[in-house]
Image (cartoon, rainbow, N blue to C red; front, side, top):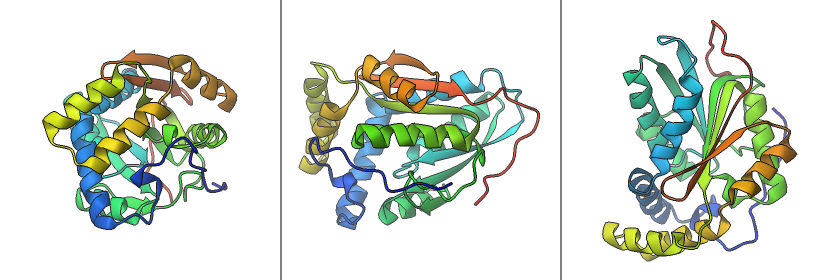
Length: 243
């Protein structure tokens, strides 16, 4: 697919905005992100979205799952386990702008390419499912719309976008949870910036409409939003991701 580099929102700055950030700090941050996903609702939000898409797909059918901005690869690895319980076989692949993150995902068992999600090295309809978790809020509005369109073009079956819901009590809840889990100051600062960058349900629906997709947006625990849509009715065949 053709495209260009996605632009970062000018609202605040986070360590993971910079693909050249110090590798050791990135590793620590991504490990904390994975813990936050587990305890603060990120993983549950992704599971909710994937279960919605898998509901009408016959068990036993192999499905490729592309995770754009996969980080340490924790979410697709968990998705494989969840899907297996329902008889579904997910084959995960990741895409990351950060070489450090891509290496972490690969070591965790998620094959990962290094590229920008705005110009993924994949053909249209190359994978069955596309997942984007907590990536869109890092982007300008124009780039977030481009990302949504790229997801729609890549997925044969459907897309899950899971992100943060902005809320008045969210910063306090995050501070309490971050202290309980012993997060470092960089992770705390980045988490608070992410919350400021998060969406209201109306804002996320507006982005989806601008991208030309009709999606269902739901609130989930932990100040989360999940958008899901089908790109086509699930058919009898599935293919491998194509580079």
